[in-house]
Image 1 (cartoon, rainbow, N blue to C red):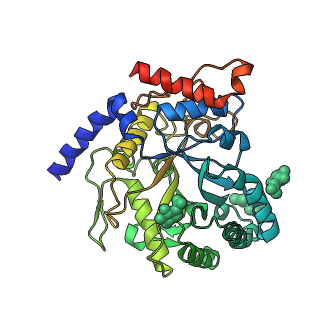
Image 2 (cartoon, protein in one colour):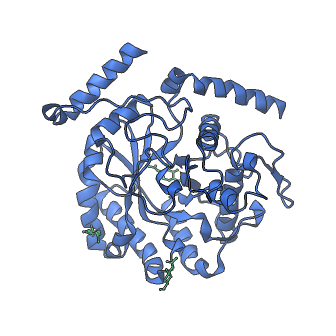
Length: 377
Ligand SMILES: *[C@@H]1O[C@H](CO)[C@@H](O)[C@H](O)[C@H]1NC(C)=O
Ligand SMILES: *[C@@H]1O[C@H](CO)[C@@H](O)[C@H](O)[C@H]1NC(C)=O
Ligand SMILES: *[C@@H]1O[C@H](CO)[C@@H](O)[C@H](O)[C@H]1NC(C)=O
């Protein structure tokens, strides 16, 4: 334990020395949401992410302006098919057409490695959509097979943690009884196609719902006693790992120990309404700063200590047009002008807006930025 702690503080210093982060690269991926009217152009965002050494990005769609701005950048992309298009994709010809239009033209220059079909479909109550999810995933997969791309692009979906009926203790995690009929065959699909099961997990929601009983330090990866699972005797020092292991248990309870669980979204808001307890810049900095440190250490969860957790942080920018409570518009690591919302050592460089003649030459602007950085460092 003492040994682990000194390891922690060593990495902490490394991470907070901005330059080292640029050499090591950031081991978490970042969700690049665009529900906003004030975001920088994708070419400028490509420069920002390059300056941060981010190498994995997740989109909620297959925006061609974004995918073409990231040509030859070495960044791996997860792209998405929105819930509104999932039912259409049950038609194999439509799925193939979508791949031919949104994936094929960008490979191999933009590295698309995963397609999410739908987001949090089991959170709603549209049972037709729920029933269409697997056939849509199968059509997209068959399309990839016919294009010879199934080995380099995974097909999956992102799920809400709400789909668990029980999440405590982690060893007793299980899916909601009424959803098993949909989830069982989806798990069989993941097993057959060797693709990961993705979950959006927010310890913030658990804390906000019960600030009197849930330990803030436990939710924020700060030093605390932790929680011991009475069945396995494993100690959890943070809530996110307990949530991940609850999902592993739920997957196992449906007969699968061969599927990897990954985190497609997690994060902490830096602002909220008066009833959104805990949404502060200090807490967001602790959550995301500690998360970066944990992933840099390649930690696994107590149940799978040798499998490093695989995480996409939500989100790159504050998104001003997201509906709902104030917290929804304040999950970003950065303001739209490229300045960090709080300091966790992520000081990227967002180039100024270029004149229109320059905008037509993204390769030149990226080259220019790379030069600027090498002069600065
Ligand atoms: C996806 O849904 C949107 C909104 O209904 C629609 O405009 C678009 O054409 C659909 N895309 C495909 C590929 O079906
Ligand atoms: C569930 O369906 C009802 C009626 O169809 C609707 O009013 C409600 O908003 C839905 N709830 C969710 C979470 O989608
Ligand atoms: C697809 O998912 C599997 C299982 O999680 C993983 O091992 C593999 O690296 C993924 N493939 C790509 C191209 O990302």
